[in-house]
Length: 115
Image (cartoon, rainbow, N blue to C red; front, side, top):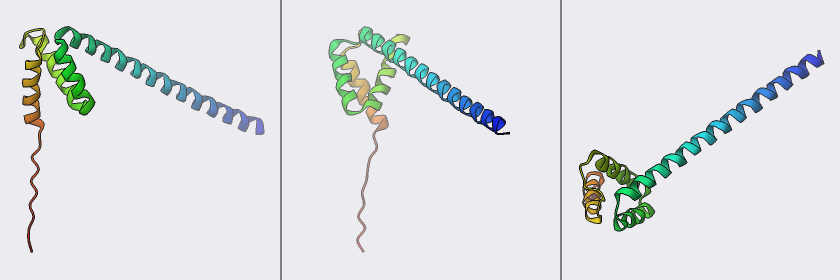
């Protein structure tokens, strides 16, 4: 009976290790796919942006990474659909930034009520 208990325990340990290995492999695959997608995105941006526009986006990425990613995606879509001339200049990036900033900006109003 102790042999059966030992075998069941061993089988349970094997299953746990197998599940852990599968989870690690899936995580590694997901990480690789993200890296490939990032590299593809960088290549597309390098092809469609002027050096000054790339520099502006890099500076923006340092300050607001999520917003910079949104802008990069928008620029790629605009360039691929032909709605902006390629290479995209710094002026076009500035205009897009102003447009997106006005859409995402929040106005904070603070009211002080006196008693």
